[in-house]
Structures are given as C-alpha cells and as structure tokens.
Length: 195
Image 1: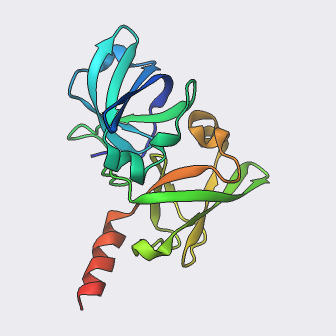
Image 2 (image 1 turned 180 degrees about the vertical axis):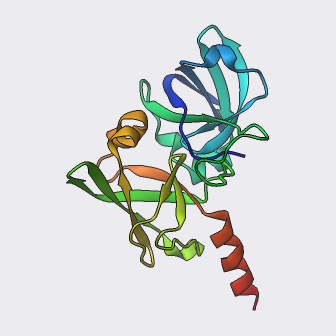
C-alpha cells in the first residue's frame, strides 16, 4: 500500500535483460535503509528489492509489468520517482495507491502558469478507466487531484515543490506516464458494468 507521496529519486544505473524480464539497478539516497524482499514503488509500479550492493539496489520487472507501464522506456541515468510502502499507523497524506499501474497515458500539453504547471494527459478509454474532476489520480507514482476531466483525458496542476521533487520536470509532449486510477472509481465502474 502506498500514498502517492514521493520520497526521493532513484537513478537508473544498469538495465539487464533476464529472459523476458528486466533487472533494474538503481542508486537512491535511502538504499542503506532498504531490505531484500521489500516493496518499493518505481514511477508508481510496485517492485521487489532482490539485491543490495552498497548504494545500489536491484529490482526485477516481469514482462507483464513492462507491457503495461513505462518502465521499458527507462534509460541509463534517468530519474525514477520512489516511494516505500506505507507503515501501519502512518498518516495518509495522498490517497490509497496500490502500486498497480492500470495503463499508460501520454502528455499532450504542458502549460506554465504563474506559480504552477498544468499538464494535460490523454489515455486510451477502451480500458474503461475513468477520472472525475476533483478525484484522485496517480501519475508516475504521484498522488494528484484531477482538475478537468473528459472521456479520455484530464489535467492536473503541479506546484513548484512537486515539480522539483518528482520526475515531472523531465516530462515533454509525448512522454509516456504510468496511470493508476482511483480505486473507488474502479469499484464503482465495475459495479455499474455489472448492472
């Protein structure tokens, strides 16, 4: 369980193919606090730490994860948003995030406003995922509030702190982002389709 509040960056150090899977070795400022078998969200994707080596750690992404997320786009030196699992009893500052990406979205527009940035994201609506205005959305692991919502797109506003402390500052038009839609919305959509 995650909250969508990013703790820091991981920097991709090495990408190795292992059958159909990919092993990512990253460095982070809290590698020394990690443990083998610990879950860690990378751009919102829950992956398990399989190896620790000094300030580097390694996680494995299986083929299904690579197909559904932007992890297969990662390159050496790229920054990844990191969040460790929530501890029971912690405050929930973001919203309930499972670390299971539903689909990829694409950045279609970036507007620099006075004191914030507005990002427009488009996604394939055939998977029946929905956003609602003022609802929650997770983009690359970041918990955000939807500003405008339409059938296959939505906008979010990013404050300078979030811009500096997440990989939103790397986004360009065409950047693929991981989307995890709000779990409450998912349940309601499922209920609706059953009737």
